[in-house]
Amino acid sequence: MWFFMILSYIMVAVSGVGLALVGLNHYLNFWPTTHITLDLLVSIIFIATQTLVMFFFVGTGVNIKEYTQDHPEIGDKFYKGVLGIKRKLYPPTMMVTMLFMAAVILDGTYYLGKVNEWWFHIFYWLTVYYFIKATRAQHTAFIGSTNIVLAMTGVDRK
Image (cartoon, rainbow, N blue to C red; front, side, top):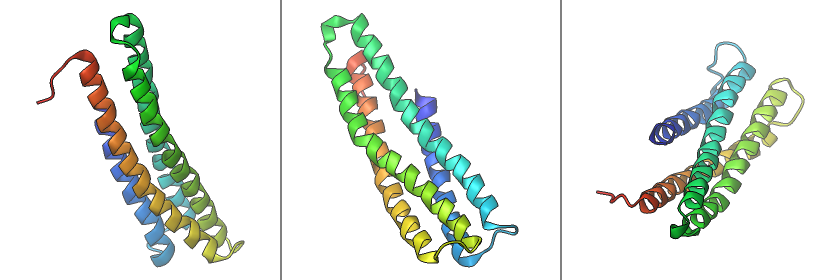
């Protein structure tokens, strides 16, 4: 659990740097080849990161559900807590993923001369906004799920 949580934090930071590089490359054109190669490289990392975050919470939810089924005396309040965390986490995480993909596609189509540059600007800045929003939601969700696991297993946090 801890390994994937720490890996998620590292990958979210790398994704943020990649998102900034995509924007800077669009405006400054510093990548030595084309916009599309950088966009594809960052897209792979970005989507893998968001998928890792979502699967972390899927796996945590499954483990908590199984634990509560094996220990019926603790009830289902912990599992309901994880479901509440997922309801807050998934919408911004899915939105930032979709917006990022739209921004990358629009960056490539602008680079090829097929669309107006304003489409990229709109989707890029929406992506930046939702990336910040999703990162905050993910951080809060990590804290919440850790507290649920610690409370469920009876471990005191020092």
